[in-house]
Each structure stands twice: as structure tokens, then as C-alpha cells.
Length: 242
Length: 263
Ligand SMILES: Nc1ncnc2c1ncn2[C@@H]1O[C@H](COP(=O)(O)OP(=O)(O)O)[C@@H](O)[C@H]1O
Ligand SMILES: [Mg+2]
Image 1 (spheres, rainbow over the protein chains, first blue to last red):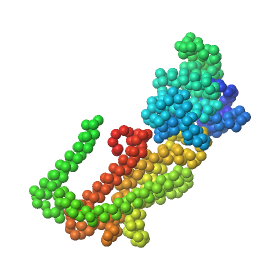
Image 2: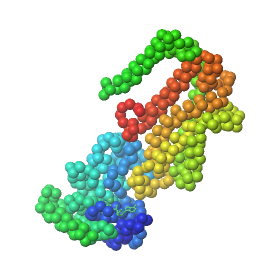
Image 3: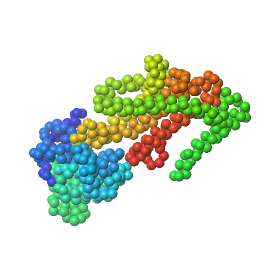
Image 4: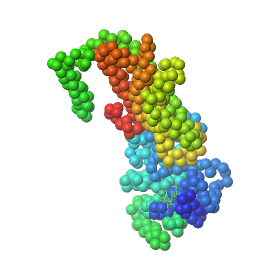
């Protein structure tokens, strides 16, 4: 796949990715290497210039996407509940059912009791939880996340990372998670795709085996550090080659 | 907090009283005749004495003002929505809205009064012309300043044009619309008064501006001041009422309406 913007920028070139159902894949790379562009092409928000996207044959798969932006991107005039219910209501789900499912989803992201709070009254981490609940409320098969936790403090980010993993382990939706943090990618993803800029392309793919990641205290373990070192090296090489 | 709020009311009130007292004192001490400058006490007495005739005029002016404001608000909103739906419509009509805005109302009021037989309709049109533009331009800006990511989100979920307008664009534009409405409230009153001045209609159904003119001709200066007090009071009341409306509608989510005083 490739993407050239109207300005002439070749944002992504020669990208070939095969993603299986239930994968947790991280797209790792410096700013401007086309991560967001790739994600937006997958979401169908911008057209693909060259190549194509293949989704599973059933038509439902194409529609079944959740998207989480770097900012929480909530409607400030609506309560947490109404924000989460939005995707269902846009699809024509009756309001009462949509709200019931939204409330359930809010509880899943540990925001029970905050249904009627307005975004202004929520902390950055809580807003991001609402945003994740909104992305998951339609039970998507594919969850796209564009540096969702980059603007949060580290303590909040660690908690959200762990909670996201729990959700993923329970539901097994496919995740493509964009990040520029080596540590985040190793903690979260089974597959880490390293990208380099100008033009944006994939330079390497590494994997973090499930056995390693299942270990308790993975974040402080020696294997975690080893994986981080490996990924950092790959990233540094990618930058040199650019 | 409590003390600061108290001061916010107390300070201007106190200043107002001092000013009025000084005025009254200056008028009495220098024995200024009432047809040059009446004191506040005399103005208040005149207001009370002439209330029956002045209140009728006040009602007339208020009717025109609110009718003009209502038409300006609905038409401004409607046109702004139309602009948001079609660039071509916006590009072809917006310049004429600007023309309407920059043409001084005093200059076109006589024409409108000649063209439109019904005086009250003519006054309404004049007030509407003045009040219309801030609502149109503010709402247009508001409709165009929705969060791009939210727009993408709506697109991702296959929202219809109508859903985007109703659930995304209109709520985003709400604070802008209300800010425009607050400006237009005062302008509608000004437009109505100016048009009444130009029209100069006599008889029962004439507004406050005519009372001012009439009192001026008859050198009833205290009555003139009384009518003036009513005009200003009305303007202040309209502004406060619209600010309150805006505060009530936005307080739960918009930055401009943080807990505290309506601004
Ligand atoms: N809408 C756009 N129009 C033109 N160029 C763009 C647009 N969006 C991104 N780009 C360019 O494409 C390249 C990749 O951008 P992006 O996908 O946002 O990178 P990343 O998310 O990895 O930081 C950058 O050089 C950027 O300037
Ligand atoms: Mg990006």
C-alpha cells in the first residue's frame, strides 16, 4: 500500500502487512513516519493511493472498526454515557438499548458511577477511558488506536496499558496500536512493526512471545528489558537508514 | 469568593449612587432649570407620573425589538445552516449579508418606511437588518469550527448528513450562536429605536423613541430623560436576560460558562 497526499508528500510507501484476527500489533516509529496515515487508510477515513486493503470476506468486517484518537475527542456537550452511546445511536439502535449497553461498557472501563459526568469534569485518564469505551461499545473486530495515551502522565498510562490488555485478553478483538514509545509497544503488543520516515515504510517486524508477556511483573522483568533493548536497536537502525 | 462577588455588585452600585447624589446636588445648588437638566429625583417622579403613557410606548418598542430578534435568530440560524451545507450558497450570499451589515440603518430606514406601508412592519425590518448579521456570521463560524477528529468519528460510523448536522455541528455552534444572540439583542433595540426616530409616527401605537422626540419638541426634558432611562434599562435587561440564557444552556459543558457569574 502507498499514500501520496494532494500536497505531493509520499507519506507511506510499499507497506505490506498481514494481520490475523486477534493480533495485537504495535506500529512503532518516530513522528512523521506515516503511522497515522496508515491507520486512517485502514479505517477508511482517507483513500488509499496505491494498493488495496483486504478485509475478511463478510461485509460486516469492513464496518466493524473502533477508533481511538490521541485526544479523547469527546463531545463536550454530552455526558459520558451519551458519548459512549453515540456509535450505537448513529447506527439506529434505540436510545434505551444504546444507553444500557453504553453503561455496561463504562463499567468495563471502570467508570461506573460517572455516566452522567460531563467531559469537563473528568480527568485526562478518565476521558481516555470514555473514548475507549466508545470505541468498544459496538463490539468491533478491529480496534485502531493512534497514540492514545501519549498525552497522559506515566502512572495513568501504565494503568490504562494494563487495563487495555485485560480487555483485549477477554474479548480478543484485533488491535493496531500506534505509538512512539518502545516501552509501551513491548508491554502491549505481540507484534511490533517498526517504521521509518521519508518515505514512511516498514523496516522491521519483531515479536514478543505470549509466554514472556504472560509472566507476572512483566514490566519489571529482565525479559522485558531485553525486548526493549532489541526494539530500541531496531528503531535506531531504522533511523540511521533513513 | 463571597467577598469578591459582593464587591462586584457593591462597587458599581455605590458608584452609581454617588454619581446620582452628586448630580442631584449640583442641580439644586446651581438652581439649574429642569428644561436644561433635571435632577434624578425629578426624573424618577416624572417616570412614575407618566408611567401609564410611557409603559404603552415601552411595550410597543419591546414588541418590535423581540419580533426582530426572533426573526433574526431563526433566519440567521437557518441561513448559517444552509451555508454549512453548501459552499456555493455561502459564497454567493455572504457578500450581500455583509452589504446589509455595513449599510448604516439611518440611511436606509427612510426608504424602507416609504416602501413598506405598514409602519410596524417597516420598523421590524429595520431592527431585523441591524440584528441579523452577528447571528449569521457567528453561527457560520461555529458550524465551521467543529472538531475535525469528531467529524472523522461520525464518518467512521457512517453518520448521515442530517446526523452530522443535528448531533455534531449544531451543538458545536451553540456557544457561537448564543454569543451572536447576545450582541443582536442590544442591536435589535437600537435598530428599533433608530427606525422609530426616522419614522416619527404619532398616535397611540408609537414607541419610546417617539416619546423622546415628542418630549424634546415640547421641552419636557424630564419626560425625555424618563423615556431615555427606560430605553437604557431595557437594553441592560435584554443583555442580562440573554447572558443568563446562555449561561443556563452552556454551564454544564462550555468554558465560557464556568461555575460563577453569568458574563
Ligand atoms: N493531510 C495531510 N496532507 C498532506 N500531508 C500530510 C497530511 N497528513 C500527514 N501528512 C504528511 O505525511 C507524513 C506522515 O504523517 P503522519 O502519518 O501524521 O505521521 P505520524 O503519525 O507517524 O507522525 C508527514 O510528512 C506529514 O507531514
Ligand atoms: Mg500521528
